[in-house]
Structures are given as structure tokens and as C-alpha cells.
Image 1: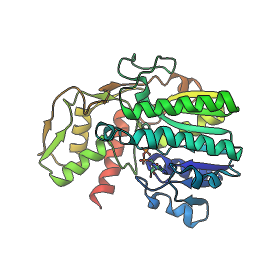
Image 2: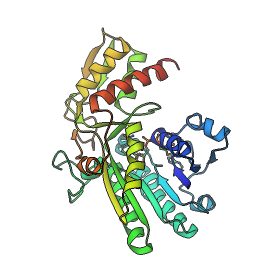
Image 3: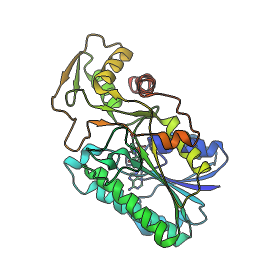
Length: 315
Ligand code: NAD
């Protein structure tokens, strides 16, 4: 299959590219390297298995040609920094909602009708029941990032209903693992690298979320696509439990060997305005389809801490 991955040089995108190349797909990556890294996919570019297009998806004219002859688009490009919206209010609109419009429109013009989309658990907002099933609604996100994901889902639904597209929308929990370039574990390791005696934790540390290992995430994406065939397929991707920020801090301190570090909590029930302090997705739909998740949240955190420590401390 000829597949196009937007954001394919990013953390999750590059793992997806690995899987697509492994199964023999011809892969085009469209990425502007704003947070992605070419080194994540350089081996595939060198072997001729990935065609890399260094383009900004905000410019629809420049991206149209990339979609010609493609069978399926995996749309992962976005601003992945949820906190940014507290300071700059149009990033998620441009990098999320408008970019998703541009991708859909470039697909329509090129005659491509299958899309998989990386949405997020944050679309459910703050008062959703836990674990949150896909049927929950209304979805009322409380961050600008969450609003852009919901906007993206809405546009995809419109292209399905109006232009006969087929879509797979994945609402991710926190995805962590090798090549991670942001998020709580990444931040903690960087802070301890700078000062091994002190770890600042945003909020009171009682925030509690589900974590999914990135290999599980990309395997689940491909498994769901292979085993479903509705016009619109909606799946939560996560693990069966949660891990608290206090527990993550303890795991990172243990794995870095910074046993003397004192933890300083900034206080409050959440890391920043728009953060959702407690989140856990129901993954019954995924499990009932026959997919088994390899790592629970705590195992995923410990595994990620180990791989990121060797990546970051070696820099
Ligand atoms: P990432 O920042 O590593 O990946 C995003 C990629 O998109 C990067 O390679 C970046 O360079 C590229 N990109 C951004 N804007 C672009 C533009 N205008 N044109 C071209 N390329 C552009 O982040 P990630 O964690 O791998 O996230 C991938 C997707 O999954 C995102 O859509 C993110 O919102 C979603 N998601 C991630 C998580 C998580 O926990 N990591 C959770 C929920 C949803």
C-alpha cells in the first residue's frame, strides 16, 4: 500500500513509519520538522523505503502534490504541546483544525478517501465518567488543544458524510516510550539532569492518568484498521489502569539513581490551566476486537524512563 504519514518524523509518527515499512508499504512522510526529528526516520530514507517531503501542512498549495496516488493517510501532525495554548491562543487552531482541513481537502482533490487520525482523550473534557467509553457525550474539551482535536474529528465526520470518506479516529491516552520528545517523564529526566538534588512537580502530584507504550499504540492503530470496516470507526487507545504523577516522580528518581532528590510540588490539583487531572479511557472496544495491550501504565512508565534516560543522559 502507498501510505502517507503526516507528522511521520515525530515521536509516534516515526514508530508508525517503522511498522508500515516493516509490512512492506511504500511510505511518504510529510513533516516540517517543527518538533519531529529527521534522525528518527533517516534509516528508511537512506534505504529508499520512505519518501520524505519537508513541507508545512498549513500551506495547502504546497502539499497537494504529495497526496497523488496515495491509498491511505495517517494524519498525526499537530502541535503536541497542550500547555502552549495557555500562552499562544492560535497555535492549535492553525496546527490542528486548519491543518486537518488542509489534509482532508488535499485528499479529496487527489481522490484519496481513507484517513486515520490521532485524536486525544482530552476531547472528553473534565466531567466524563472514568473509565470513559467512546459513547460518552457531549464532549466538552477544556483546552485549546482539545478543542482543535474535536474540531478535527468534526471535519473528518463531515468529509465522511459529504464526500464518502472512510475514517478511523483514535482517541489516545498519554503515549510514552522510546524517542519521546515531550511529556512528564521527559520533563522530569531533563530537570534531574540539570539538578540531581531537586525535582519540581507541577501541581500536587495527585494527577492520575493512563499511559500507553508507543509500540502498543501503533500496533493497535494498524490492528483496528485491519479489523474494522465501518465508514466512521472510533476507538480509544490506552491501557487498563492509571499511574499518578507522584508515582512517576518516584519511578524516574529510582531509575536515574538520583536518590537524594527532594520533590517540590507547585501545588493545585492540575499542572496548568486546561490540564485534566484525572483521566482513564475505557479500552473495552479495542479489547473486544481482540487486541491485547502489552504494558500496563506503570510498566510503560518504567520502560520509558529507562529508554529516555539512556537517550537524554547520553546527549
Ligand atoms: P510530535 O510533536 O512528536 O509529532 C508531531 C509531528 O508533526 C512532528 O514531527 C512535527 O514536526 C509535525 N508537524 C507539526 N506541525 C506540522 C505542520 N504544520 N506541517 C508539517 N508537519 C508538522 O508529537 P507526538 O506525541 O508524536 O504526537 C503525534 C500525534 O498524536 C499528534 O497529533 C498529537 O496531538 C497526538 N497525540 C499524542 C499524544 C501523546 O501522548 N504523545 C496523546 C494524544 C494525542
